Length: 118
Image 1 (cartoon, one colour):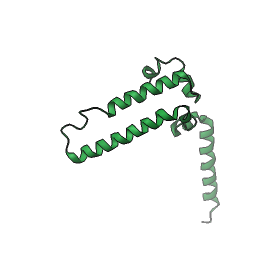
Image 2 (image 1 turned 135 degrees about the vertical axis):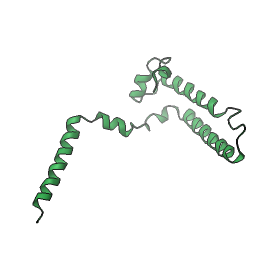
Image 3 (image 1 turned 120 degrees about the vertical axis):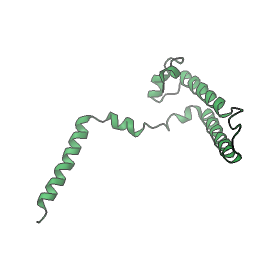
Image 4 (image 1 turned 180 degrees about the horizontal axis):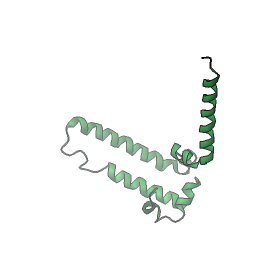
């Protein structure tokens, strides 16, 4: 989350990191979903577009508004469903575990190839 988005809501960054719903997180979510709704409901969003892409754009905007409604109504219910990305998991792994796992795999493959007849 960008710092400039979280800065007006003291404690929200820490609460988000620990998956806690707090008044600061609620205010942040309300502000961000409101901003997203403004972007999705712009009057001139499809002005001058061919009708085909304009229809696709309006459908996508309706889906986004439905998602924003779901986020707004879920409130604290959306917090337990958050999962760290695979990048976060990968970065959290100690380098020694990655190195030792790769080394062990390489050693097994070398042992198999040297034990093969030929």
